Image 1 (spheres, rainbow, N blue to C red):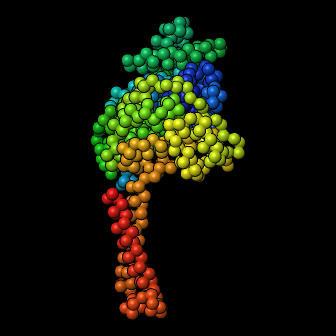
Image 2 (cartoon, one colour):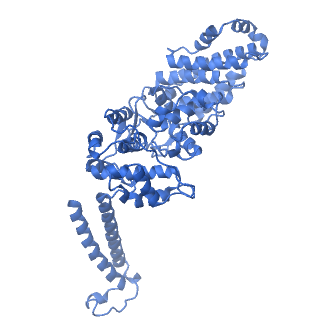
Image 3 (cartoon, rainbow, N blue to C red):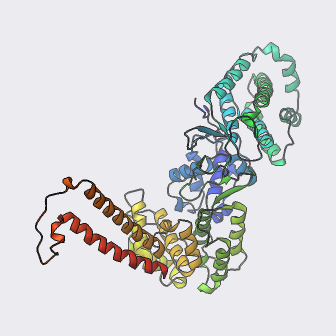
Length: 559
């Protein structure tokens, strides 16, 4: 069964607001959320909304260069917004995104059983309705449908919970919707009394009539959102000769659909509310039963809902740290706005307190806590209010020397005299990851960020230890981590020892399979060793060498 929407459900508002939430805080603050400034379409947009992102690029005053092309940014924003609970995340951040636009995700347990997040069940219900609905689907209908379903989700689901997915359940729902909609009348004579009543209403009364179809406590933002959608519809179609009929059909079918969906939800509370007889899997509680992947776009990690409160959102602590560093270095440009390192030291100390450097297990941090950490650097007045911008790369890319020159141009060599020493290694890693034939301006941004990041970590061992313990060393290109290198060397030696043991045991078990004995010079081995095969002799030598290296590494690790 296809759980996706058959129709475009991504609004221009959704593309704009999720893009603004994805970019750096400093860029977000300088861009307007007013769609009229971008000549945005009033209808729904295609999968990624790339056309609108192109307009954002054109109106960004070059501030979006760090994200590559408009297509790349649109793709990454799509990853960022397409997760279970992202609509609630939008609500929690003060903006509404209707209708449901994410793709329902089927998860597999370690027993290979299929599960669906219960919040995604409401998305499937919306998509099935739009698939079956036989008439035009204006934004008024889709918005009211989504507002109703969201109200039911908020009422019935206070935390994250999963249900065992069975296609038969949703096939049954689809048949019920189809059966009901076949009974929808289209004869104008059926609607004549209502048509006369509705067309005589002034807009404020018409708005209240539609609004009352959803029996909820409307918030101010929801009410304003729907009023804007309905007004746009009336202005667009009021000149049509059959406007009265269209408006009446819209009202009548919307009313019947909402009543139908309410009945479906009430009759299947085990699917749409907490608990119930079906087996459920709760996020974080049933360890090892239900692995939930962490989704990451290039520049930001997708927040996930908390297990006990679906309006709380978390990210891995290591992802929160890198998000913070990116905002500090490329957004605020902290290290370009201070005369010496001492000014920034109190801020860095606060980061050491915020991130648990002794915790060796991966852990999550509330987004609200991350925002509190971010506010620390905004409280300290910076001596230099402005900073130089990163210049564009040439069409044929940039070199290591260009990178060093840019670090000096930005004034970063004042705070970090050693920063150019990392340029070559950072350049090599950025070059490996480039998407085009040549390094681009977005790659230069990455390189500048990485050079600063390694300098900060080298100056604060606690932060460096945090990054190591949270398995983040590989994400800092030029970082020299003795623990990682020591563990890697020890692992290689232990592997060699295991292979050696296996070889010797195999030879004992099957001596007839050993290769023919070969003569070895007397000066090289003793008479006893000469009776062994050449392979055994080599493995004995390897064992002695690996033992020596293992002892040496152990001493280094203890130090």
